[in-house]
Image (cartoon, rainbow, N blue to C red; front, top):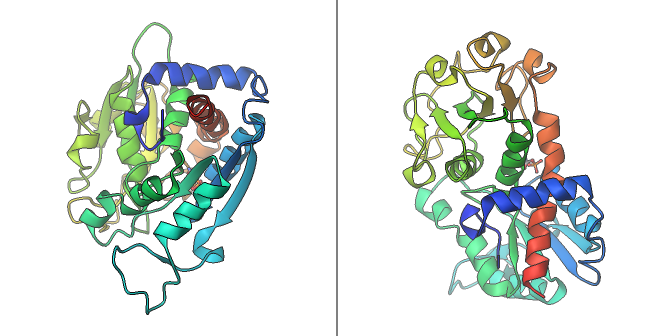
Length: 317
Ligand code: CP
């Protein structure tokens, strides 16, 4: 693995999940692997879990970590090729990324979409420019279209809790939200579930179809009740429309996950990447009840990041 930006960078998904589970049993088993190596974590957007879990993962491998909230602490970044920088931007991404590459051995980057221009967001311009100009391995901490560290932690969590002796049924369900959110988490989750040994169903109101390349192999079911039938895992997430790009099409009344909806399932475990809006996306009764896996799922972010960092370090030897 040279960079980690999507499931397509992973040679063997099942092996990476097993690696994460082994690291969970012995987090310090490779505590010298990263000695003398530096991980830079660059955030253009806020984070709790990704920031802390990736730092913890790197520390478990003996790495040094530097964190920068580039949007607040850095010079205003220019990304356009050939720009005449006589406006508000102070530093071009070409120099900024190349300089970071001088200080770090691996660079993590979080860069959300602007949700204004589909083509611009889905070209992954910022992520690809960091890959081009740093000259070191890049670890996606969530990009415009994907969140692969979250998806790996999700698959690790499903693997830990799946019923014995059969493929689990996993349902990704859209949930209401007051803001327009990116499609990165559902895109990525769909892409990983399509690569995993699960029966995968996606349910959402009409108009919220994800870009089709992320959902190849999934069953799309617009009737949430039908989709949830016999589910073993329910992954709850809001996203804005891909077709009417970045728009919130309705208030989503009736789509919040509740205990009543669980009655139709195989006592399904409920997942969410967090942060979650209580009483809007997910009911308090689910989040505070025995079916919720959200805290265990967030805990697994450490071992997902550690498995990926371990492979990046081993490959750069
Ligand atoms: N799930 C997730 O990525 O959380 P943060 O945005 O807090 O990092």
